[in-house]
Length: 323
Length: 290
Image (cartoon, rainbow over all chains, first blue to last red):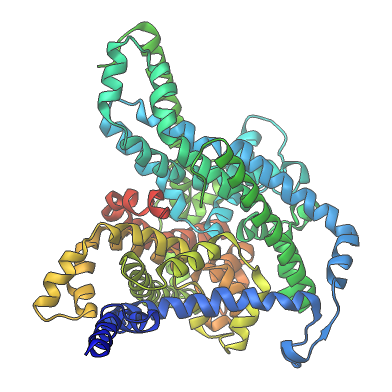
């Protein structure tokens, strides 16, 4: 009798607390449609994002498409050594960092300043008009922007040089002289993306409670003080997150922009050639898959290291960080 | 509420002036392009500076549309923008909705995979090798499949779905709908504003496809618009194929180039005003965090 009761109890207990595996199976079955919805996306990430991560092993091989990853020879760090001892390496590093740093110094603050200024406008119609105009270039391709750049600054047909000519000044080879290249691509980036970049800051500013401004006026705060003590703190977190992510892409200079500006004017190659364009030439055009994968891996490692460090530092200072 | 002090008025004047300059600097190159594309060839050669043409002309556009390459490239890009955007929206919103449901098993793991794919990119060549292995080289699908969704967009869209309560689903389930039906008939219509915004971003991405076509498409008959446009901007004669317009029509290459730029931009500019109010919704990042 007693043993029977305890047996029933044990059975009941088993029913009430099914094993983890059973519960998992139950949940999976219950949500089978959700997994079905997720499946195409998950397959995408598997095939196009995570198989390439595995494909990084070709950086340590002499990969041949005919032999495949399994049969190609392993060469250790040979490609990395070859790349770092290549005289091009310093040149590529210099150009990449120069363009990236100019970007961080001049491009990065631009949307912040413009969104603060937009926020100070009282005329809403004017504000909308400015926004409408400065968002447009974001939607134009780099091919088109390269075309517009040519039309504005080229030596033969550029508007600026036509004006120079009309007022009796010498023409300037903005596109062909290496001295202008870094400045030119920085201006291009600002022209294309700075307006669009304001959206995220304006959205953060829109979330500020208007009572904060009203209260600060009661306390006699000037507009400068309001910007400093209310608006800026409201977007500080967004600024930090964007800055961390920007650091992570310090080795990326945007292939299309540089490639187009360089391709159209070979004379600037020495200041224009960056890691991305070099990888394209060595990998896609010359078929040196392993060598160019090694360069890509080097870039990725720098990127993720910088993001990790910046995120740690941000958290040390009590900020939210990216993850 | 704001003070009308002298310093305040000085600031306002400076502010408006600055933003007017920014707007003009942004808009002028676009205006100038459009003007040149409509300028009469004879006037273009005669005048040094043309800020507003005296004689309007459609010659450049007529020349372009009689070439072989340009209209077909326009068709390919239209296909990419239409089909690609549809696929992207389905794939992105499907995954985003699934990970927005807190009851989903492996949810945190999937979120980690998405975040990691944003922070660590293996670079160009490994991705290229995958596309090659799949036999997609010279296939138009190489311009859609490798970019059909992104970790960033999934996480952003998840942010919108987060605010949709499970109770809504439960109510629909009692009425006999399954998750797919719920998703399609209830969740997606509810999130229409954000879908429109993401649809626009995807469509513009597909329309502006250049780099992927450069590496994946060798067959010039399958080139999308941006590649043809780029070849035209470098050398109009080669890109326009069979017509040697330079000898026959005396068409200034600049006029022709700018007409090509305008044609490549018009579709975007047509949808732009209608979708502008949705931008802010699609561009917010606040929802990335768990």
